Image (cartoon, rainbow, N blue to C red; front, side, top):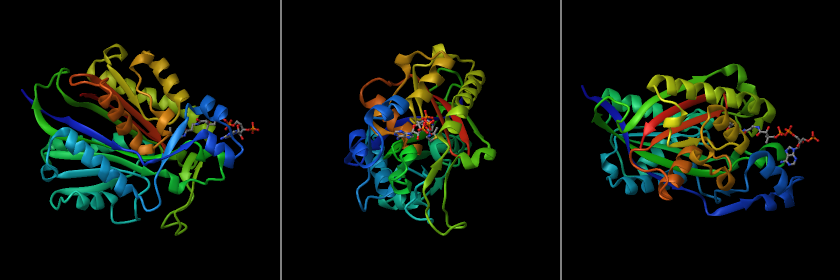
Length: 325
Ligand code: ACO
């Protein structure tokens, strides 16, 4: 008996031109390259230019993903954009991207799960494709976190960057086995008791301002590894796999120490871990598709590889996805 799977046809990414190094940050703030690298693994991040919006970044990543997949924009009937930094409060930034791509059919909407956004959006698209509601989807993560940072707060502003990544998914019939291509399982969680540990102190309904990112870094760190490993074990159990079966681990790129500790706890070999946090910083919902594209472009991830994704972020929200590329 065959099953419908959401198969990745291609991926694309975009990073703004301007690079901000730790050394440049150290000229404006009481910080140092050494402190940032030691605590986070971050060496530089990209910053969107004035007038460059999340929709612009997302559109460039989407166009690159369509070109890589070799499909026409008109064949896309679902667009889900994971972002916490929309162009406007409404309409959804996904609609601006849809329009920029010249698509006027199907559905486009935003999804907000902060750093877990891409995993949540991938799971949502996968469910729509498997029901037969849509045939071909663009799942995009795009962020301009530089716009919601307090650039005088050294405890947060050194951690984040801007960027976008996207994948094209297509509903295909597969055998219903572990060897199938496509999304094999997804696991999503949230727990609002932690909402004040990582949040933005503004919003349309509360302050009528955009606000700035605030974080209790140690508290986030304390919960991150446990939450990440829990949902990965769920993915292993759902598919009868283990760390030994994974070809590539592509985690949300928040902090090298969190990634290393998670991989170590799960017995995932360091050479299977895709790391981009050093060059991109934490780009929230964009970090996983950016890392995926990096490893596809440099030839590491190949068709048939088993790829494990995970993310954890504000809310808290967290989730995992296991897919065969
Ligand atoms: N440069 C220099 N010193 C700094 C900086 C900085 N940029 N930021 C903080 N410090 C100082 C602090 O003021 C403190 O000084 P004090 O001891 O004199 O009070 C000292 O460094 C230690 O501060 P801590 O907050 O305890 O540092 P910690 O080792 O916890 O590292 C960090 C901070 C990197 C934020 C860490 O807690 C962390 O990575 N947390 C996870 C947060 C995260 O990744 N969030 C991303 C979003 S959520 C997600 O995506 C998973």
